[in-house]
Image 1 (cartoon, rainbow, N blue to C red):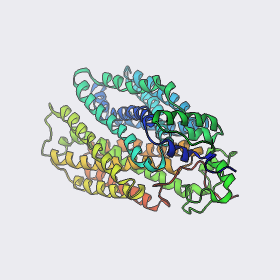
Image 2 (cartoon, one colour):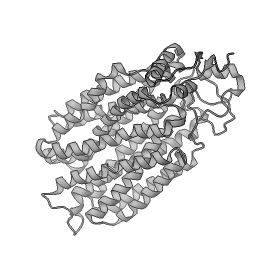
Image 3 (cartoon, rainbow, N blue to C red):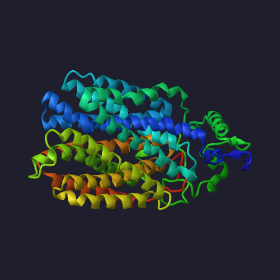
Image 4 (cartoon, rainbow, N blue to C red):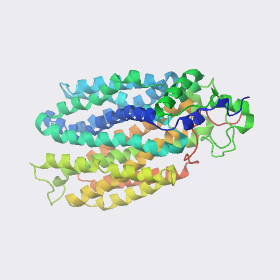
Length: 485
């Protein structure tokens, strides 16, 4: 057994390497993947109304355009998670970017409603794997700065939503929805072109016993960052635990609320058998409900913005927008509320490493709920947009923190699969949400839609409170914490 001068773990190596130019390049690449997903998702705020008018669709058919995307994402979230955990993060990138780019571009040329549904569903399958970028980047970031840098990473989603809203404002009035859909596939093609430059996750390589490859990546990172790895041999957490017996990881692993519990790496166990073990039942259920509620509320606020901008005048004696200006108002309202994610990012970055992941989410859920309360009754355009701006600020911030918290909870050997299933459950919320936001508001039942969002937000906050552990400041685990069977 070597001492710290001859043996070091991945977390120790990442701390030595630090956060520098190397991670900055990874941030740009992974962030571009999130820009791609955000743009493809924000299309739903604009394309539905345009296609409904062009092809004379019913409200239900219009809602189905969003629903099939979320269905595809539900399937893709789990599938790409398994691929990533078993074959590497890079293999996941290749499949996700390829399907999203090609199907996204082809959907711009859809000759009819059915072909559009099919191609958008396939696009959703690709989009469902975008969570891999989060796990991949997370595994390169040193523990002390992980929270703040993951917030910066999440800002690329916000950048994508703002860019898509601005692009729609420019493209849609003059060129129509097909050009918007085609141009929105551009970031996915760029991710695909740059694929060969992205390194594999060293944490994944260590988990697979490929420590030499992981060490080579860390040395390149140290060279570019202007630092140097300590002399010695890189060992996986499993090897370190075996060498240090029962004293190695008493306070570093996340999956048990009792920090004195040992973990055992089960190399012969499948990701599903580990994920659905008795140790994770409570964790899984709470994370699934959190993702469901958060996704439902997030897309609810987005779709509520577009629906109130275009449809509220039918339900209110005070006409918000003239028929001629409704489309322009839609672009303006969606663009303004997209900017709401910027203060949400700033707020979450400020508090996530100070008060912890759990308390951050609870605070912001409560604030979002309070801002939605006045929308139980119809308000004027300015107040409605302002309230939705504030609600989106806090809901988007909880979404960001949840996307940090969940990958931190699961160990490396099931991280992408665990996050993928949680994301897939969230997509169910996304599938149901358009039916609520579009259906209820179109039927002049705005109050019922808002009540449903409020209940969902409160339940999500309760799930966070009941979660048995906080991940702030703790190292990532490579395998499940468990007693010997």
